[in-house]
Length: 167
Image 1 (cartoon, rainbow, N blue to C red):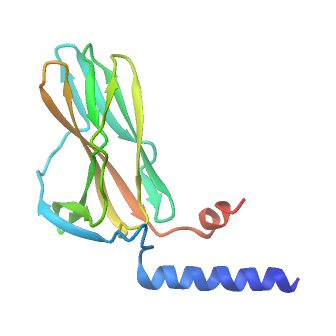
Image 2: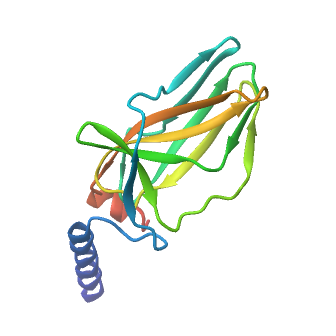
């Protein structure tokens, strides 16, 4: 019984500190806002060969979760997708690129064939609570460039989600 109380106390202290500081410093990365971005970036593009879409697996993620996103290639094009992706933060009605200092992407790409999908993720612990969009750039086999964005929101973690991570 004493161990349970101690664990609850430690968890309570963790939650209080989490709420005070507003983020967990994940691998030394802290969120900053960069340059202002385009106002409208679509989540789906129709080409002569079909549609390409980017969607969030969930519309809301809490600060203790990873954000997952899916690119669906329903076109006739083979897509080349770099590992590098970004997120934009909505502040005062304008989109700003999220800059995570110390975050580096490998200089690699993934090929997405027609009719296939690809699941991507981002670590959200460094993000402040608010509205975001996941932004992915890619090219087709002809070198034509595309950009898609999927909206999502970062919310405070619920006790259920925090405790569920220890199951």
